[in-house]
Image (cartoon, rainbow, N blue to C red; front, side, top):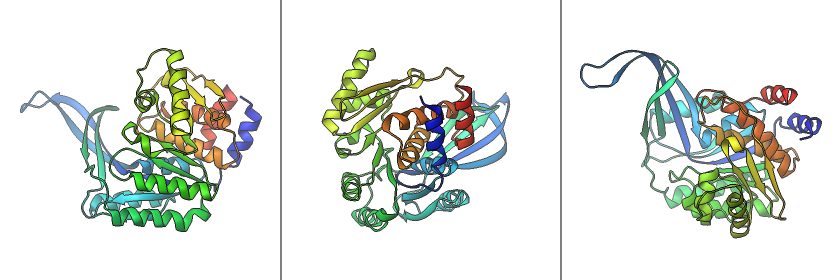
Length: 325
C-alpha cells in the first residue's frame, strides 16, 4: 500500500457528495448497571442510567460518510411516529440531508433497541415491518434520484432487506447512475441477488458471497471460485469482506487482489460493513482505484471493530493508523 498516495486520497474526501439509498433505522441504547437477578424470572435486572440514540442501517452509512468529511444525502422511509423525529434529528445533527426521506404511515420507523450492562450487550429488541413499500413511494424515491443525480458523486445502495430496496428502485437507480457516469456501490442481501446486476461494486461478507453465488464456503480456493463466479453472473466488481482474513477484490478485468487484515482486539462488529461502504464511496469519489478503495476501507474497518456499537470512524483515525503501519 502506497501510504503517501492514500493520504492524498483521504484529503480529497471533504465535501464529496454521496447519496445513500436503503433501510433507515434508529439504534437506541439503554445503558445501565447489572447487580442482581430478577425475583420474577431468571434474568438480569438492568438499572438504566442513560439512553443514547444513533442512526442505524443505511442511515449509519450516511453517518460514516459525514464522519469521514463527506456530504451525505439520505433516501428511504420512516414511519409517522416519535422514532422518526428522533432519527431525523440525529441525522440533521451531523449535517445529513434528509430531503429524500419519505414518511410511510403503514410502516413504523425501524428501531433496534440494545440493552447494555457493564459495556456488554444483554438483549436486542426490534421494531419493524419488512413488507415492500408502496408503488407510490417507490416512484417518489426514483424521481428523487433522477432529480438529484447531477449533484451526486457516488450512490450507495444499502440493502438490509427491510422493504425499501426493491427491484424497481435498484434497477432504475443503477440505470440512472450509469447514464450519468455515477458509480453505484451495493451492500447486498443474498435474496435480492437479481437486483444488483451492472452495479459498479458489490461488497458482500463471506457468508453473503457464498449465498449470492449459491456455493458453500470452504478454503481460499473456494473464495476465489465464488468471487469469479459473482463477477461474471452479476457483471460487477466484487469485494468480499472476510473478517480476520481481510478482503478479496475481484475486478471485471479479471484481476484479483487479496488485502490482509491487521490483527487486533474486536469489541463490536456492529456497523463494520457500513463503515467499509462509506469509506469506499468517498475513496471512489476522490479518484481512488478499486484496490485503493479496498485498502482504505480495510483500515477503516479495523478501526471500527475496536469500538463499541455503531460509533463512526474519522479521517484523523485512519491517518494515525496509516502512520503506525
